[in-house]
Every structure is written in C-alpha cells, then in structure tokens.
Image (cartoon, rainbow, N blue to C red):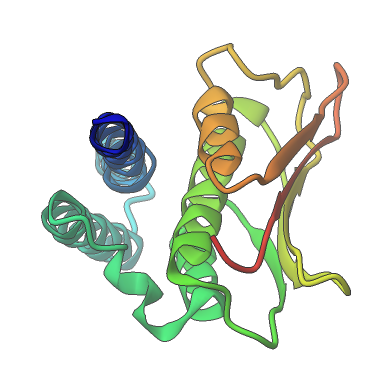
Length: 212
C-alpha cells in the first residue's frame, strides 16, 4: 500500500510538472513568434504610412518575415501541444540559435561552441531561454546591440549568456518572463544569474547540466 501511494503521488507530481512545462513552452515558444509577428506588422504599418519614402522591397521583406513567424508559431503550437520539442531543434542547438538570431529585429552577435550535443530536454530549455531573453532585449531594454553565446564549459555545463547595452534594471518578477525562466532551469538543477544595474549593461547567464 505504501509503495502504491508513493507511486501515485509521483505520477501526480509528474503530471503537474508536465503541464507546467507545457505552459511555459507555449509562453516562451509560440508567444515569442507572435510577438515578433506583431513587431513586424507594426513596422509594416509604419512603412506603408510613409508614402514619401515608401520602399516596397523593405515592405516585402518585412511581410515575408511576418509570414514566416506566423507559420513557425502555428507549427510550434501544434508540436508543443503534442509534447514535442520545437522542430527548429531537430538539427541541433547551434542551428536553432542561428535561426533565432537571424529572425530577430535587432542585431545579435552569436557565438556557439557546443561540441557535444546535450540531451533533448536541455536543448529545449536552452532554446526557450534564449528566445525569451532576446525578446526581452527587443521589448524592454532599448539596446542598440546584444550578444548571445552558448558554450560548453570544461565540466560539461552548458552556459547560455545574453548581454545587451540597454537601460538595465531587469530582474525576475517584473513581468519580463525571467521568473518563468528561473523556474524552468530549476527543473533540471540549472541556475540563472541576472546582472542588470540601472543604466546597464544587462548580462543574464544560464547554466544547465549536459543531461536532464
């Protein structure tokens, strides 16, 4: 009876944890795509309103980006609902991060040195952390440039770091999504460190084990 009670309790805890992870995946994944889509549409509206210096090639590029983000958001919603990690991770974390930075509306310098592929759960957490942190840079920091790095440390730890030259003042609990990231990395015994004095710069470091 004790064994049955313990097994049942573990099953309930696992189900609750899975639902929380799915909620965070939806927030940090598809929502990021939709935010990028909204930003692109705002830029398109601005360009179209300026009839004097209207550049159709720029508008077409923005429309293409908005369409791609909408398509990716639909794909991630469908796949995340099935509990599958984002399809962009199929080719590994380096390619996923390169795709993420290439679609950013702000210039991002990317550095990746991950010679050994982490487990799928760690890759997924790293990807969503990068997506949320880059979204924060675009939405809240006022930065003119930012960097994203993912480097395997000598002890096997995957270190993800996002820095920007923005206004600073970022901290967990202010609606920036950092609280959710902190909860996410703790599920695999990872850590999140935020250094963001008023006036900047902001440096957020996420350390994750190679396997969950």
